Length: 639
Ligand code: FAD
Image (cartoon, rainbow, N blue to C red; front, side, top):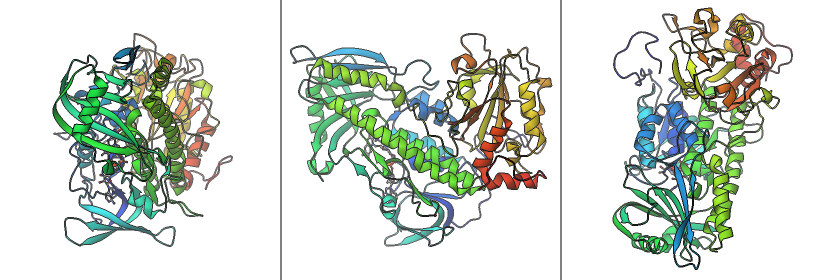
């Protein structure tokens, strides 16, 4: 964590200086509807920018106190690290290490353990798969928002009731809110962008004229968080039980060592039927759980929370309100645009991933860094992911619920589960080539840093202080792009990396680092770093190009945290782990949401330039001109 850049400040370094805010509450850049995981992720991301005004509203009277989703995938933990609270989540949470499978014994009357597998294979992620209450996750987000420059807090008791987009492209969106704590009163908010994170029955979605489409057959689920005693031996493992003829059950041990969540599969609902129509009771859930556990005992001492809810596998046609020639102004994220069963533990994770994908894009457009075309990529990228998840979930749900006790059926479920562990860890997402994901990358230079997939971290040593750390620790949720040069063998900052730095420093035509404004630090838009193959004791920091020791802040202090060494003394290094070409090195462009946008040769300055000119469009041109450099360059298209 870096601080004291603009003068020594005592106290909590995580409490950012408050921005001066003089806008009226009724006019904001972004209105977020809903304080679930999607809304809070987006609000936390946007609150990092002092110059963006945000309102987040919820019809509830206060924060979620208990319940709902609980599984936090490795990829979500990587995102939490970027927000600065992954360590606290890890400390409080239950860590999922192994999964066990139980099914009927031969003859059918009893259940027995048939397999035990590791939950997360080696090197899927440096972050664990954990279980923690959604309400607690909300608290971490709320805290991060409250400590941001905007000191953002949700406005509760505000229910979105109408939404109207202006006639012209630039007009704000008008949102009508009922003030639930003030009788019949309502208020109007004008926003440049509105994001509906308002759950499966989204009002925003309805106002956009969209609907969730998919399976009409809905599955009813019971879920209970309980303190219990039992002689079932795997109560502290994540465990899938398929009983002979009494249905299926999933055990998810919870944080704190004693609490357990039981997902109990109930019946399929008829067309149009809701969970509430079935009159499910906690007693009925306990009874069903007992029969599935049989012959093991199950004595419930306390029910902390329970719910019965229906799930359909459904998705919207698009997640924005684009129309002929008009850029999107209204978006939906999370359950508002896709729903699926809890078996794969994806509800909260996918909702947060939607918002993380959208947040930096909105910020880039609002801050004038990128053209509004960037916003099309949100729906294009996330809709494809949602569709994939639904197909995965449908198959998983089918195998899990298969009533047949045949060994072959059960094995199929286990095999499917094992095969897709990486998927449920959230690390298999891969975006198609687009404006922000380069189709003709030189992937062969870094086979393990797959273009379109999230940057897969590995350990490195920071050259300036010899600290062993994850390279992924540098990827804060601050809206910045990352450009990481992996130096060819023997390069100690004087070869290809030096040439690259000379280009980036020359301010020549197309230099992407020109995007930083006159009064901004040179890395304020693109954060450039390098990883060398030499051990850190052999690397001469004082011979590094200036760009890797940039001067920043009001005193022009030197940032010493840009240079890393791969050699950490034991085990494979990042070059080996991520298949990086040792002879030629690689230049990796990473998006603000951690996805690899391109892999290039270290000397590919033309391609590098072309990529950033496409992304930043006229803004790049403007900044380059302001800095006194020529505008327009051969081989690049300015929108
Ligand atoms: P939500 O978490 O649904 O948040 C939407 C928010 O929008 C809510 O706070 C709501 O009050 C607010 N809102 C809605 N309409 C308006 C409006 N018009 N104006 C203002 N505010 C509005 N997933 C699992 O994986 N495991 C589980 O056990 C599980 N249990 C669940 C139990 C219940 C009762 C529910 C509802 C969901 C459960 N889920 C579970 C699903 C999981 O919680 C969701 O996938 C996840 O919360 C989606 O996040 P979201 O931010 O998209 O929406």
